[in-house]
Image 1 (tube, rainbow, N blue to C red):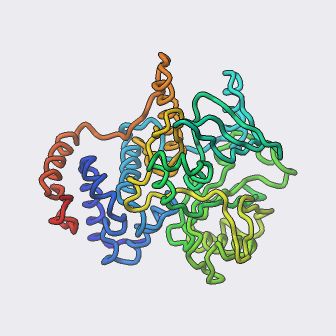
Image 2 (cartoon, rainbow, N blue to C red):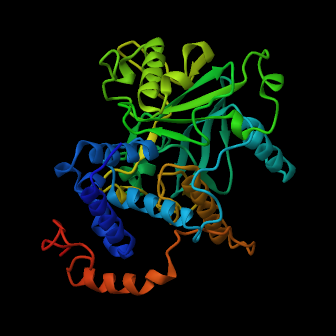
Image 3 (cartoon, rainbow, N blue to C red):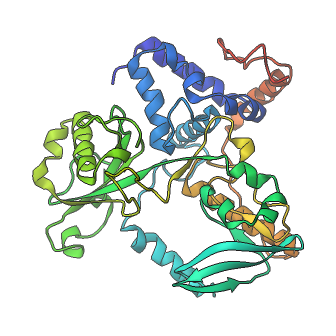
Length: 420
């Protein structure tokens, strides 16, 4: 993908503006502007627009036109600092060295059980019970058997679109944050696994198909797993797994002219393969039909190819101006706390495990504080900012307060309206 030099220079200038913007400008100005508008994509080349559009969708299933410039800019900032080996201990992308259950979930469950944590799997919460300004229990269902769960403190750690269905009207009325949660936006972001009869030769590490209509990204797993793949998994025929994410389910594809959410499973597979082969270097050679033994689409997706496709687990996205709609950890209900990747975050502010992990730490600390515990609080990791830029942040804060643009912002449509 070739982008004219003057456009690359302009994009670099906008990165400079963002990297030197104070927090107040980010939250009050860039939060209320789309990444598309911030990067001036409307008047630039098709390749430039593809980069601006596809990068946000690969990160959080959002198009550049709707994604908050603050959220995308801070993600780019973290990537820059990571590659510069400043402030962050680990690479931008970390890949598990075994299947998810083996490398992470089973080990984590075992660790929690060893600490005495009771894990009640297969229990579905149906609604909170609310009385006298606090939660007094949670109605639940365990294999068809109703039960009530009672505790001193409650943390609701479910996706944003599931929150309000669990709260009775009186509880929703007790805190205006719940109304904001109901207005947050979600998009489909789901995956496919292709089981290959030979090790994948696509890329050393993850790849992104920036020109693909469905914003496809992925990686081959075997290169990260220190074991004999064929001898460990399956019937011995499969030697690698190609894991693919489809981030855009509403844009028409190449073969059938349909968005992914209107395609049958077989059409989705053919479209994804066609788009990867079209976008990847030597795509047809590295991913021929002959190496694909089988495939599976995310089993949570149902009704594909019908008038009513369903994805029960969409992804929260950071749309323009969504920050005020998002809640904090604490609520007006003294024994009830929120956790999830949609909750206000100080670190990586995207739908991610990092944001979810941070929210869990905030919830644990809130309970420690509310209960008067003397236990040490969980560490909260904030965004890294280069000490070399601290003078510029101070200057920009003063400029923003005075309704002036950032020093490096030569074209700023936001001013002179400013924030007054």
